[in-house]
Image 1 (cartoon, rainbow, N blue to C red):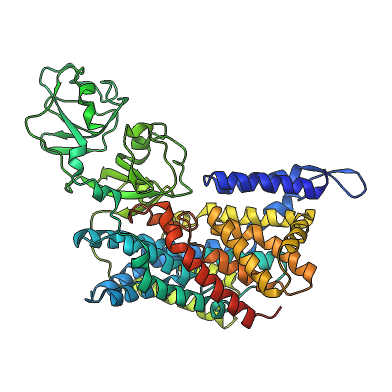
Image 2 (cartoon, rainbow, N blue to C red):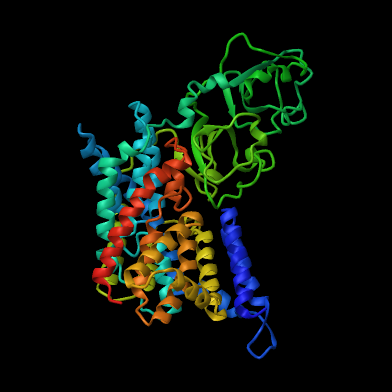
Length: 599
């Protein structure tokens, strides 16, 4: 095989793997990169060569200026969040409620878009979703009319500046790395993206309640969850007394799942297998409530005279909802195989997927990205849940309202300083981001531990790996071959090329992810521009519109995934609202590119 065929085979396998599974996307992409460094191919002289890329070329992508800037900006965003500035700002903005729903939606969506233009929308939505979920529950409202449009508003606001979304930063990194472009300024893309975002925002404010059906979160539809539990009393003569939970055989039940023990009026939440049973313990199970007979053969177990379990907050336990992220180590594992209770010090009470409560034995459920879990955890929330990459916390017990403080304004000053010096072109974005992240650490706006956690290494590896694959596509001639085929099917004319790249990047971003989708299309755009003898920038902007505003799937952005369960949505709801929004943003974006960016 020649280099083009070899590269095409590897890229094809990687794309198929990414479409079939969203788990470990970074590893799948890097498997393709490593394959590019060892794959044999026949050169133009008929000799067998090894490696379309060298090892150095493959790993050089991780030291790209744009990739380093993205890593640094994760720390900057963590500093802003940790000082409470974001929470206090949003609390102050949303505290006063107005009677008119349109006015309230305008304030909520508008402020979210504005803030997300300068801060990553993932921590922004992490603050908003629990607040709105609690508020809607308190007032008996449907969060489905708010949460998805709010996520879209954050995505559209972020698309209007270079630093508002990782997708724009990633495209900028590709330009710097591949075509020696100096990189965009923070507001250089704003004239093109802002009109699309504003029109989409108007549509979200006025029309999303008419487009989206009213849905309740699945766990709220279940009613009193106490009805889905079973309680058993350990009698005083039971032979189970003195045995651990595991030794007593209460760990591997067919249809039931032990979640807590009530002992002398105190609750032992998320009990582990080594807890020793005592007489008069009340064992609380969740699962198939028709399976009480499964517990009858345990010596000395009987139903108590009075039910004690309820879902009120206790001094030593709390209930919360979490959504499994695409980077979670749980994806593809059953609850039992994941050893969830041991790993996260929490018990799963229920699992919801695509708007439906999954019935049957919880331990047998194979978890997927986007699943919503109702958890019982200890009052001091385990660090594995609160600080890990496995979950987005979307609903939890009310905490103290955040307030502005000196460190909040210090963090804000660092961010504003970064924006100003980059806008005035005193320094490059990567320099400003590195200095700002160092300042966040020096002034203790962000701890070292939280800074380490803040960097999403899967994003960094995904971007670096896809940049390396793009180099291999160009070096092997694969990008040029695809471009030649691309031009056969696309009508001649600049406007048609813009439309084609918008559609291609939007489709790839919604199927794979906004970041990987764009980076697979960019090498094709570079080869197409070279073949046509035109500027590459109009095609880049078209891809930017298509990928950074991709909202027709819950998997394109973490914020979309975050609202999936709490909004009670089904997958089709994202198409129902996202498709018309995509048409609007694409049409306006292409018009603006055609006007403002010369070919």
